[in-house]
Image (cartoon, rainbow, N blue to C red; front, side):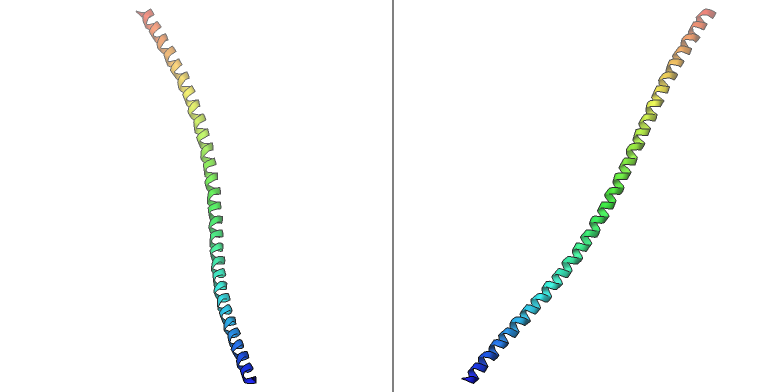
Length: 105
């Protein structure tokens, strides 16, 4: 009877040992997976940081371009006004020359 009890206890200990071994292996696998996930999250975080910087730079560039376009638009408006004034002056001069020509003839 004692032998049977010892055998039973041995079998139970063996079973427990196998279960602990299995659990240890599973914990090892989970640890590796967590390590991999942590690396991936780190990489994604770096990428998001880079993208944020790029978006910030692009926003600054767009703002700069918008300001330049505004300045160019003002300059074109000014040039158009000047051309209008010059055209009127040329028209006036032409009329004066025509008048003088008629007086001479």
